[in-house]
Image (cartoon, rainbow, N blue to C red; front, side, top):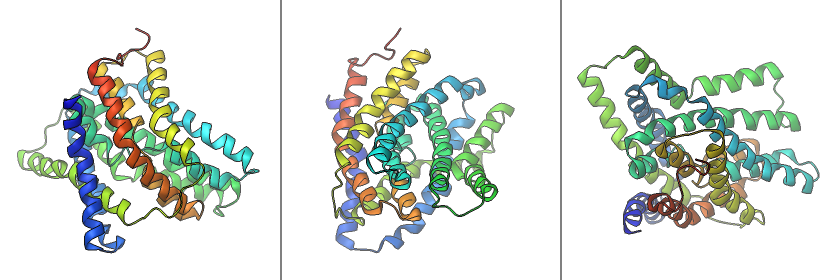
Length: 320
């Protein structure tokens, strides 16, 4: 247990430091813009590229693993979305945000750093695959559901074009695609280029976690939604358990791949859920509350899952 505590304290400590600094210095949220730009457009893409480019190409086509992990996310989304639609009398936009809060984890900012700390470089590829393919799905879900609800006035053609553009041009997708191409061609970048990417990738986790802490501090908790209990339970407990059972059932994956998927599924609600809620004007403050509370609770739940995996209490395959 001490090893797990030693692993998560520095990780969540960076989030706490960001939170504390933001509360002390009282900088406006807009001041964080360039930090987010650095993380999303440079540091994390450099990390994904480096990790994927050095991976044997046959490991990059584990479609059963990809489908299983993404499908488990949308089972959780449905578990919140369907009851919410029924209870609210058909409020699809609000139910969509609730579903995303229950299923869309902070895999981009928290996933790579924690997975690499916990399971080493072997966790890089499953983490990158999950992040890319889940983000592709998330980019499509919100616009489609808002269009179904009548809240998006764009034509179907323009809507589809916007979704494709967001997916194809996202820095994570571009970097991972470039990494796959380099791995396929067995190309080694020049030493100065490789060293430059290494500098950027080392900054990814610390900067992302610090920025996350600042964001949480500058979006204070104003109201605790009634749905927060089910959302926290679905996101922090049910999601990783469904992912674990489903991947055990459909495949025979290595311990590192299995546990990386479970760990990413156990992460708290993504900050992007607030961005999506703000973009469409539904459930905005409650989405912010969901992010803050699930992040606080995840200190305990993520630590517990890591302990279960590291101690052997959770076998790497439920159906060997």
